[in-house]
Amino acid sequence: MSKILVKTKTKTYPVFIGNKSLNQIDKFISSDSKVLILIDKNVKEKCSQLVEKIENTFSDKNILIINCTEKNKSIKTVEKICKYLSDNFYNRQSTIVSIGGGILGDLAGFVASIYMRGIKLIQIATTILSAVDSSVGGKTGVNFHNKKNLIGTFYQPEAVFINSEFFSTLHKREIISGIGELVKYALIIPDLYDFFLREIKQVLFKKEVSDKLIQTSISIKAEFIKADEKEETGLRKILNLGHTFAHGFESATNFRISHGQAVFSGIICALMVSERKCLMQGNVLKKFLKDFSFIPNNKILKQIDTNSVLNFMRSDKKNSQGEINLVLPSKDGIVINFPVEENVLIKTINSFKRMI
Ligand SMILES: NC(=O)c1ccc[n+]([C@@H]2O[C@H](COP(=O)([O-])OP(=O)(O)OC[C@H]3O[C@@H](n4cnc5c(N)ncnc54)[C@H](O)[C@@H]3O)[C@@H](O)[C@H]2O)c1
Image (cartoon, rainbow, N blue to C red; front, side, top):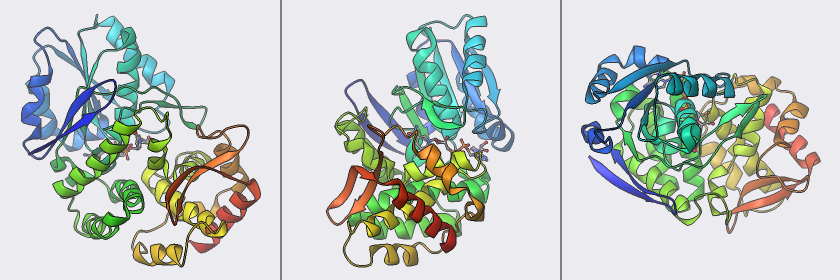
């Protein structure tokens, strides 16, 4: 088992990685703390033994099962959880334990941050995406009127637990989704490009997610969070590479494609924009497409309505003064807040649709 400390201005907390990581969990619940365990419905059904072991760790607890879809990542579900907390007299000493992927983690984090102005939160990641990305960093939130993560907070957990045993029951779609966020790290840290390329192949073809891969990903994310917890200086925005297109793709398909799949496609589009804008030297896009050609694109995107994607991109949180700002790869590293004209975005989305 390994431990990474995530240091932020508001909190320092550990991320435990490994098969024995869950043995540490009781250390984070004080004896006077009543626990609400939120569990993703699929995790409860498919990982029942692991889940039961976690449930048994807590004495004073209730369990609420959540059907985790992007549609249910909503204010309505937040209200349902808050009502449950209130009806069962949870108080400021209480703790929410989230056992699920990114959807549940974002929902649970949001509820923990607003119920009684903030109660304790523990994240147990059950998807690859949540293990390498979303469980750490404190971004919480829900979708609003089809707009991705429009309402949310920054709220750090007490601790995060990652046990890759959970991943054996993941559907291929979710494995590809996790890969989307890993590809992002490969481009952000050029020195680790080959490491991530190798590891991603292991994940896709052998269903092997090494603890080293998780540790490396979380360590990268932790550095960005330490430097810029709330995206104030802009440094953390680098982690949003591909996400402006991705959120447009997710919303315009009515969430029929997974988040990570959308991120992978969004990264390709970001590279295409960089090439159009002459931000990169040589054939970076060509090399990337060749190196990562083993990752399938979701053909739903071929039929996507370009104007609808653009419309959702206009609502992105990174925009300012009516301009669509992108995070883009460049020859000097990743640039943030790069304003891109709408006609360039339209051409890029159309070329991407023709390409896949
Ligand atoms: N907070 C952040 O920093 C951050 C970062 C990246 C993504 N996100 C958010 O994360 C979400 C995507 O997360 P995700 O990819 O984990 O999706 P998810 O939570 O929807 O899980 C994907 C699917 O896998 C199922 N599942 C979960 N664990 C399983 C297991 N062990 N075995 C079998 N099935 C399992 C779920 O029920 C769901 O159907 C998006 O909403 C995205 O916006 C947040």
